[in-house]
Image (cartoon, rainbow, N blue to C red):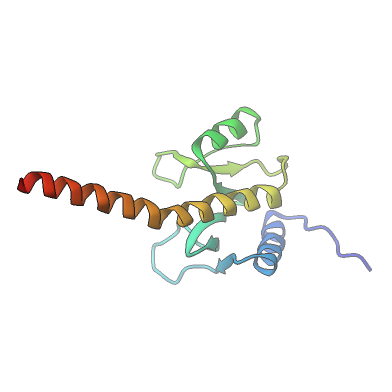
Length: 140
C-alpha cells in the first residue's frame, strides 16, 4: 500500500526531515532545551549550521540573498522575520503551497550552507595572511 502524502505542515516537515537525514549528512535538532530559545528550534543542520526549520507552520530556508530576492518576486515566499521586526536577508519563509517543492528548496539551502562551511577555512587563511602582512609593514 503506497504511503499517504503528508497533509499538514508538520507532517510535511517530518517527511522532509526523514528524507534528508536518510539521504545526506543533514542532522535534525529537535525542540531546544534552552529556555527562551526559539530560533533554530526543530531545525535541519549541515555541519552544525542551520539550513531549514519549521516556524509557524512555514518552511524557512537559508539561501543566498539574491536567490531569496528571486523567490520573493516569484511569490514563493517572503523574508523571514524571527519576531523582532528585522527581516533576515538570507532566510526565506516559504508559502505553504509554493513551487518549487519543500524538498527542492531544502536541498538548495543545504548545498548553500554546506558550501559556506567549505569556504570558511580558506577565508580564515586569507584573512590571517593579510593580517600578517599588515603587521610586518607596521613594524617596518
